[in-house]
Amino acid sequence: MKILVTGTAGFIGFHLTNKLLEQGVEVVGIDNINDYYSTELKYARLAEAGISRDAENWHKKVVSTKNPAYSFVRMNLEDQEQINQLFETEKFDRVCNLAAQAGVRYSLENPRAYIDSNIVGFINILEACRHNNIQHLVYASSSSVYGNSAKMPLSVNDVVDNPVSLYAATKKSNELMAHTYSHLFGIPTTGLRFFTVYGPWGRPDMAYFSFTKNILSGQPIKIFNHGDLYRDFTYIDDIVEGIIKILNAPPQKATSHKPQASRIQNPESSIPYKVHNIGNSSPVKLMEFIETIEKALGQEAVKEYHDMQPGDVYKTYADVSALEKDFGYSPDTPLAEGIGEFVKWFRKFYQ
Image (cartoon, rainbow, N blue to C red; front, side, top):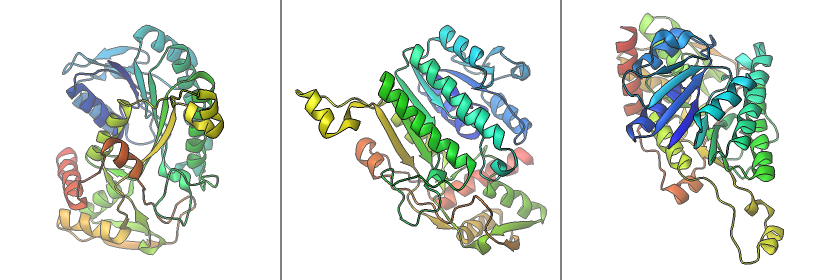
């Protein structure tokens, strides 16, 4: 099995790659290592997986010194020629597309970055999958597609036509694009709506990261909507477990002795397309989350309260009943344990 993981210098991609390698899978990783947040953290993740600083060179294949089954190439998703060449050369079995321009608030400042990476880049991945007999494309969507829905828990069966950020709009677009390619070309695709992922080697633009940094340095932390926010915080190991279960189970077309009749009754049954929530299914109030960080650090935060930010959502709460039913998937890392692991890593990494 050879799998392409895009975004391997990123938070989720780094952890997923390590777990796949542990399971004996051959992995090729790509990432453009952009400066949306610290490139040194991205290179540190790569180094942890045995990828040298030769990774700074564009389009050069670098093999891990820790595991020869892992190689890395610095590349932009929107570089159609390089993506096509990579697929033709490597002959992947499956693809996990985690690379994207992340962040809700940054989309207010730099909207074109989201179109380039999340739309143009994704169509390049779809086209490459189409022409290279890929068995399964798994891609990152986001809980942000639900917008400010008041219906809880958030279900993949809900209508998601009202995004409140450009980031969310691009992720919803990815789901629609994948559906089209599954319908037209029979490519098995699965979209994953992630719910507030946290843990060691995390992203500095995430609130828990800046909270920890500011508390330790005695700086105030900004608390939006005066702390009246809820998030379905999900530990990274639980996320990776869910991704791998799904990656190994491509959606199938429904079989029937009367396929035409089946398609008439349920047209979607003939399309190898799925979308899943991956979350803890247990929302936590922001103030409780901050208290958990304070306890792990043994230090109280200096708090600044602010109004709701544009593009933010009030509450996320994942309905993961489909994953529980189909895969026996049930995230089980307690918040205090997960935050403890993050704090332990943070202290060591930043000394």
